[in-house]
Image 1: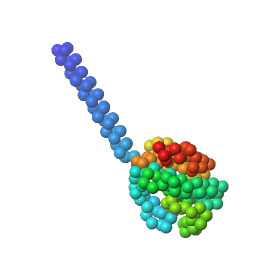
Image 2: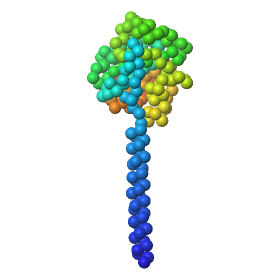
Image 3: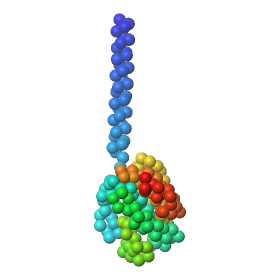
Image 4: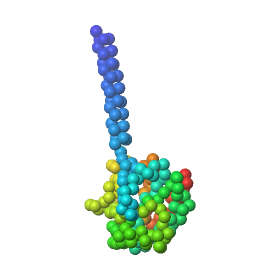
Length: 193
């Protein structure tokens, strides 16, 4: 009788371990599949047309919030240079004008587009002006700055020209300080790897 009782306890213990493992896998897969990627977002381009970020699948993407009247504005030159050198099937840049820091991007989308073309010859995709922080933060930037949404890290947009590195699978890889120039070895090495 004692043997029967012990074998039933072992069987119950074994079944509980299997059940725990199965439940853990279900929870993990739900979290993994529930996590959004960069590709789940749609934004408006600088001309106001819908731009589906899923169109960038398979490319590394450098996301940058821009401004026309900032000490970092000359970074447009380096952004355009790395876009011309590396942009194509494997890499792109997406610029998001924002007026969150001392109103350094006061222009309309049309004025911003003209400024970028005239002064820096920008050819990489520029989106419509958005908010990158505060209560009116764009949903993409909520994803970029919140670990609970991106699954990687919490961060804060600290100034104009902060850079977010997105891998070929739409996952956040890293956040680069606004003062770090776009042609810095850290960024170029990431593009080339």
